[in-house]
Length: 166
Image 1 (tube, one colour):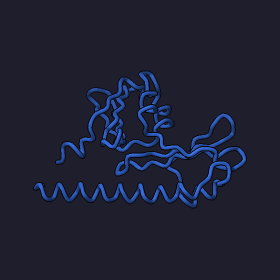
Image 2: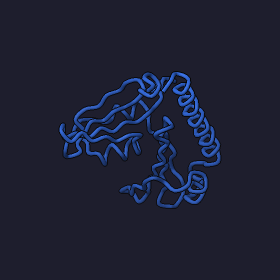
Image 3: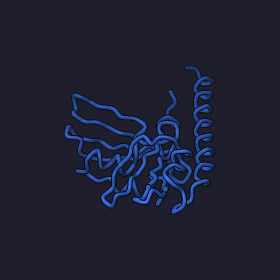
């Protein structure tokens, strides 16, 4: 690809991400914790990518914005059918919570669906990547799992789609 094509691709990706963020802000503004119902959440966000049952009878809906976006939302619906929490989970604080030995399921529940999953058969490792924003800078967070899908290590770097086009 020539430089013009690469720039056009990144401009289009940025535009899509901007539209997603704008749409999400409008959707979020229509939902009030303790008032909005599960039906309201589904009307604004659609079907979740995953639903996690919680010990207290509530359910958490996973609304990823990966791979184009830099956020993932988790929306919790209480046992009474009302929204009790709406949070963007790709934060530095949450990324720090990922520790060696955690299972892939635990990581998925914490961060939502990753932007990319790659398995390296010879190394017997799998890597999951999330795109996120750190103080306005595009970053990538990588979790490396062993053959048993337990966390070996994590890493943070610049988003390669922004820093190394092509």
